[in-house]
Image (cartoon, rainbow, N blue to C red; front, side, top):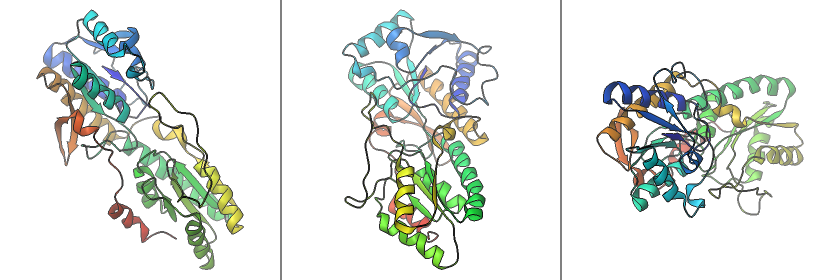
Length: 339
């Protein structure tokens, strides 16, 4: 197995579940590839046992470590992975990751015939075909607690506090943390915003005697064209622009346009570090058991998904076909509480 992409609370719970179930129920030997897709590309591996994975359930991050390596950036990537899997006499590979990791896993299975099963993880909660991904609940709790804490300092200083949370394409963390934390403005990638509308909401609060405001913005939120300048950054191996900076840009724009003292707080990697919540530990464990059971049954090209309260195996192709994003109806729930 391997863990790819950004680290995420609950990864170690998946690793532990695959090892425990694979060894105790199916009599397998389990190999862990290190550093994401770099592991099977460069033959970086270790044996995983019940003893070596003992005590990792409550730990954040991943004991296998990770990277954003794209196996298709190398012309010989798929053939190297096959060669190294054959060298280790592996029956198949379980790839634990988000949109990019699962996309690569799907291509390796569909285009190159490799035995691969995926496990969905991302704090952004944007993987299609599953209702929830592990890691999201932990990130949501961290973001909500941060907003709760910022309320008191914002009110004490009569400030506007801009809280930037993660969310490249999907605004689930911003939406749910904003609702749970009582934010006054919530900006998400799915709804391009007008900075003038944002300032009007804040000014309306001030006119009603509420001299502080909380603005929650997802890192991928974008202004409507022509309303506010934004800047791009470098890209990773999957072509994603390195995000971050919208919070500080909003800080400048809001203070300049309204005259109200404004401060930005970027939560960044704090959201995906540290101890996973109980919910994420349980969901990750259920995904891990379903993945190794699916491998035992030869159901390659599949991925465990949460549907309602049940775990089902769904095609990887379905999981990566489109992102799970916030719909206008879901965003409308928050609109009644804004401003």
